[in-house]
Image (tube, rainbow, N blue to C red; front, side):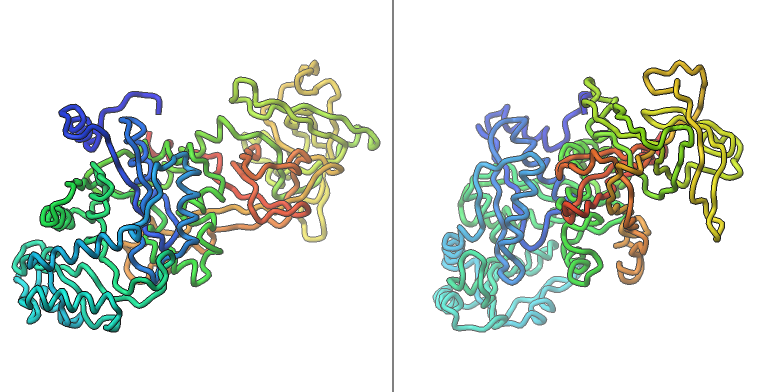
Amino acid sequence: MSEERSLNFIEEIIENDLNTGKYKTLITRFPPEPNGYLHIGHAKAICLNFGLTKKYGGYTNLRFDDTNPVTEKTEYVDSQQEDIKWLGFQWKNELYTSDYFDTLYNYAVKLIEGGLAYVDHSTADQIAEGKGTPTEPGTDSKYRNRSFAENLELFGRMKNGEFADGDCTLRAKIDMTSTNMLMRDPIIYRIKHAEHHRTGDKWCIYPMYDFAHGQSDSIETITHSICTLEYVAHRELYDWLIEKLGIFPSKQYEFARLNLSYTVMSKRKLLQLVNEGVVSGWDDPRMPTISGLRRRGYTPESIREFCERIGIAKRENLIELGLLEFCVREHLNKTATRVMAVLDPIKLVITNYPEDREETLIGENNPEAEDKGGYREIPFCNELWIEREDFMEEPAKKWFRLAPGAVVRLKHAYIVRCESFKKDNQGNITEVVCTYIPESKSGEDTSGVNVKGTIHWVSVKHAKTAEVRAYDRLFTVESPDSEEGDFKDYLNANSVEVIDTAYIEPYLANADKDGRYQFIRKGYYNLDKDSRPNKLVFNRTVGLKDAWTKANK
């Protein structure tokens, strides 16, 4: 956005910390768990963390929170790195929580030696029951007062693999009467006999997020650890552990997560959609994943602009999908190449244009660009494909397209007059018969004929074919998570429409996989990865209609 904006509350904190000399260098981190693909909500956190260090200097680390070997994969690590780079950001250090497993283990030993942690052989149900309720205090575990020597021995045996999964845990010894239930002796280590994507079978005990997070921040001397609002209650434990361990005092700050209408943001639910075949994969163009948005034709610039517009707040709210669509439409309007494609064709025959004649017309690639985006050649002949919706046998009032006796301009070409039409046995229009005005050529028009309508077309002799996929919203309701029943009950059965054979300009035969195209009068499209030399596939990114701005005037 070009206009000046006021500082958000995190920027105010950072400016104060830097101006008062509390920190010399701003250090942030983006810490995704490699258990799925990143989505638009992560994009907001990425833009915030990397954007802050771009604005104020310093640097951002990329740290993979890989403490759960059961759900994490190298595939997810690779995809997350690709997404961050595609958004336009570069981290200083690539780090993993698993880099710190030895250090974290020693931190846990230090807590045990200080009488601040104990091994608990209670079952998960017993621990949950002992936690109490928000209005009733918890009760001490019968294992809470073991000696530190016994706890050290048991924790060592946990590390050595002498216990099965679930046999015991290591819990911090804090306060079972705390009003913050997360402070009621939280579990900080659990047993998981599973192959880790980086450490293999070296470890069979793994730190919990709350234990690994703050300590990893501290090890990296993160100055501002920025999380979403669900971690507000975790901050007390974050600070307690840093204080008791006597390590670098990283500080946690929370902002409102991004909730986007007509989709879900839970990685668990997105994985469910993938595993159950509801979508074709993590990068299905209907998914809110960054890879899905990229495949659909969204640009990094439009996503960064979207994140800038929604800002950083302290309260949760539901952001309209229309705003995201507005941002990509605005960017593509300035950058996308204009081309002609006919998605629902009928034939137009110009009877007074010689059958053996062909000519090459010139079209602007983008009239919104200063240089018009360059120019392209468009072949023209006496038979054209036009959109079925551009002809009406009995025209409505104020109809400015083709109808018996009506005149219209062919984009970049001539003015034509409809003389007649043909139907098949079912009554469907199959052909529109026209004559053209030779003196009406675009850019050279001396005919003196004024027309109010312009339609697009593709030369029958030169047209290429393509499959076109028109995507819509994945769900039929604004907030599927808020509705009763299974969120999948609200899936949009019409979230994708496939046109097997559309006719496109020959220019598009060499479409670039990173290119963006406006199909004139239809919307913005890009080449899908399923394309082959003899079978091009285009995805509709967004339509031309700006519903969001209209609704918010």
